[in-house]
Image (cartoon, rainbow, N blue to C red):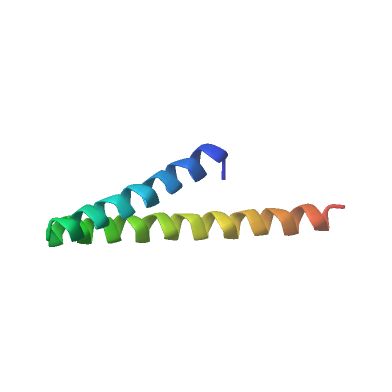
Length: 64
């Protein structure tokens, strides 16, 4: 994955943390849940990127 995708995913994770924190501070359960959901989505995307990066590394090692 490209650097731009990694930055977008990290931004989504940070945004989720902020939403969760604001939701906690204001007793807004919907905002808190949305923040948790955003963080989970970002983590899943990042995990997928790590798998793709590892597969690429293995492929590159085999082609040496």
